[in-house]
Length: 156
Image (cartoon, rainbow, N blue to C red; front, side, top):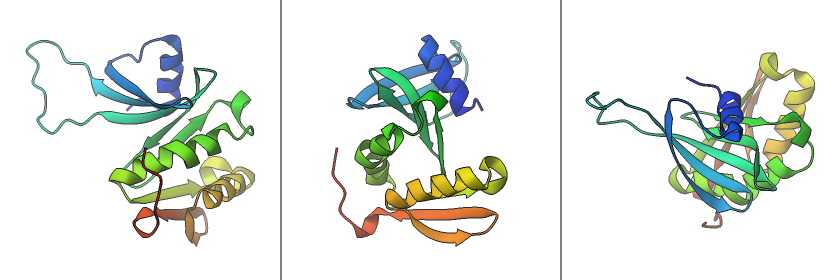
C-alpha cells in the first residue's frame, strides 16, 4: 500500500498513480479524497471493494498535510515547513475529527516512541489531548481514544 506521504506528494504533482480519485471540499482548509484502485476493462472488481479515504489539509488551496482514518488508528503526515503553525490542529478539531466521528464514534490513536522519538511523541500526545483524546495507556506506546458517543459534536 502506498504511503500517505507518497499520496500527498503525488496529489501535489497532479495525479495519484494507480487510482481513480473522487474528492469534495469539506471546508476551505480540508478536502475529502476517495482513492479507488484503477481496473482495466474486463478485470474482476471485488464486490466488497471500498475506497481509501484521505483528508487533505489545505493552506492557500495547497495540500500541506493528510490524515487517513484506519481501523484502529489515525495516520497523518504534515509537510515539515507547515508544522507548528496550528494548521493541523485547526483542521483536525474543526473539520476532520467531527467528520470521522459521525460514522465512527470511537476513534483510537497509537503513538510509538520507536517511530517518533520521545520528544515528538510528547508533542503529539499533547496535541491529541487538546483535541479531546483520552489517555488509555502509556509505555513504549501511547494509546489514546476519542469517544464521540458521549458528547455532542458539530455536524458538517
